[in-house]
Amino acid sequence: MKLAFREFGSGQPLIILHGLFGQSDNWNTLAKNFGEKGFRVFTLDQRNHGLSPHSDEWNYEVMAADLKEFIDDHQLQNPILLGHSMGGKTVLFFELNYSGVAQTLIIVDIAARAYEPHHNDVLKALHAVDFNTITTRKEAEALMNTYLTDFGTKQFLLKNIYWKDDISLSGVEVGIKEKQMAWRFNLEAITKNYDNIGIAVPNFTSATETLIINGEKSNYIKEHDKLDFEKRFTNLHFSTILNAGHWVHAEKPKEFYEVVINFLLPH
Image 1: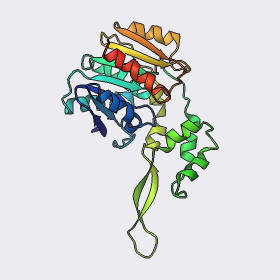
Image 2: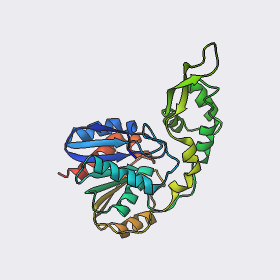
Image 3: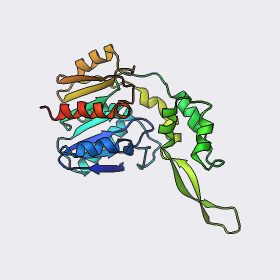
Image 4: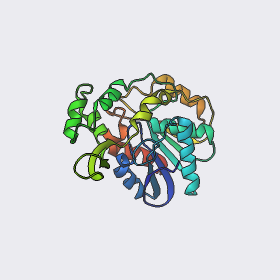
C-alpha cells in the first residue's frame, strides 16, 4: 500500500510512525526539529489512518509490509525507525520480518508482549458520533462525553474529524454537493480488527541498535518487559522521561527531543 507522508529536512532518513487513532501531523513540530539536525524525516500515516488508504486488512504484518514498500519506493538506505505505541509495534514486526534493513530502532512506550483490550470506551465514544445528524465538533464532543472524561483524549480524537464532499439526493436538484463530517481513520476496519493490535510480537533476536523510551507515569512498559527486550536486542538502551505518561512526545516534547537527539548524535 502507498502510504501518505510528510517530509522534512535532508540527510539520513528518519521514519516516524504514529500510534492508534493518530496521524502524521501529530509529529510535525518534532519532525521539523529533527530535520534541522541533519535528518531527512518522514512522518507516515499508517493504513486506515490519516490520509493513507483504507483497507479491510489491518494487522502488523501488513503494516510492516507497507513500511518496507515505502522504504523501497523511496530508495532509503540505513533508515532510522521511530514508532510510538502501535507504531512501535509496527517497527518491532518490521525488525522481525526485515532484519538488517533499518540501521537504528527507537521504540516509544510499548512492549513486545500482548495487551488486553483497553480502548472499549474510546470505540464506544467514536461509534456514538453520527455524522448524518451532527455538523460541528462541539456536537461530536458532546456525544463522546458519555463515554470519555479525559479532555486530552477527546481532543486527540476530534483532530481526526474532517469535512468531505457528499452528494445529496435531496433538495431541488439531484447532485447538489454538500459538506459532511467524517473520521479520517477507518473506524469500521479498526473496530473489526481491533484484537490484531494487542497481539505479542513473536520471539526474535537482533543486533540492530535500539532505544526504548518510556514515560515514568505510564504502565505500558514494566520491568519484565525490559527483561524481554534485553533477550531480543544485543545492542539496547533505555531512557525514562520523568513526569510523562503514555503520550511521551506530546507531554514532554522538549525532553523527548533531547533524548532522541542525544541518542542519534552523541556528544
